Image (tube, rainbow, N blue to C red; front, side, top):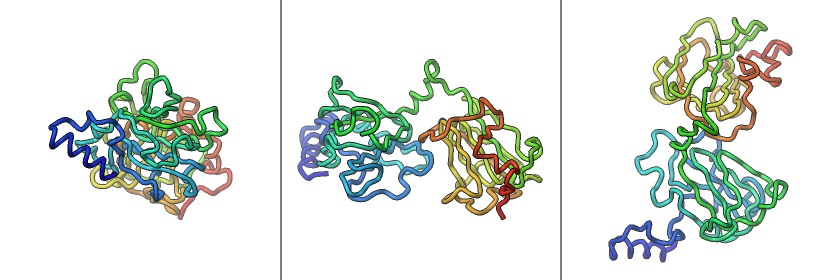
Length: 312
C-alpha cells in the first residue's frame, strides 16, 4: 500500500477519530500480488474468496495481472474472526489500484470461494456501468465470450456463505452424494462400491464414517458438494484430502498431484468425512440424478472393461 494511503488512514483513524471505512474506497487494497503468480492458488475447494485477474490470459505472466483475496487473507482452516474484512466486504476497488495496466485490459479472470464479485466498466463501481457478476466461475478467453473484454475498470466482492444458505427459492441446495469405489472393481456395484450416501442440508458439516472392511478404496465420487476426508473414524486431526464442487468430482489413484497418486486411496482402513456447501468451479455436471452411483463415461475403465483399475 502506498505511503500516502497509509497516512490518509492514520489521519482518519487517529487524528480525526473517524472510521477508516468512511474513506474513499481507493485507500483499501485487498492483499494479493501483481508481481508473482501464487503457486497452487486455485487448487481444490476454497471457502476463502480468491480472485485472479489477467491481461494476457489465465495465469499469464507476460502481461499485467493480480491474484489475491478481495475480502481479506484466509488460507484455509477455521474462518478467522476478522473475515471477511469489514473494510473490504462489498467495497469497490479500481483495477488500476491492483495493477495500473489492468484498467480496461482484463481478458481473463477466476473467482472461487464463498463470494460473488461484480465487475464494472467505470471507476468506483458505478451501478449503471455493471457488466457481469461471477460466483465460482472462470473465463479464460473473454475475447471469445461476449463484449466485456478490455472494458472492466473496477470490481467489488461480497461474502456469500449466508446467502448460499438462504438460497432456498431460486437455487436451493437439496443434497449431494458421496460414493467410495473399490480398487479392484467388478461389474457388481453392490460388491465393489459403497452405497451412495445422500447428504441433505441439515447433514452438512456432520462426520460420516466408512469402517474398514474388505473394500480397498481406489476412488471416490462426489456429486454436488465439497468434502474433507480423514483416515480415522472421528474426523479429527488434519484431513488427508479436500475435494468437490457443485458438479461432479472424482479422485482416484491416477489423479496426478493428489495425496494418493499411484496408490489405493485409503487401503483397508477406517475412513471418515464431512461435506460442506460446494465451492470451486464445477467443471463436470453432476450425474447422480441419472445414475444413483454417479458413474460417468470416463469411469468405464474402472468397471473392468480395460482392466486398469488397480493401483499397487
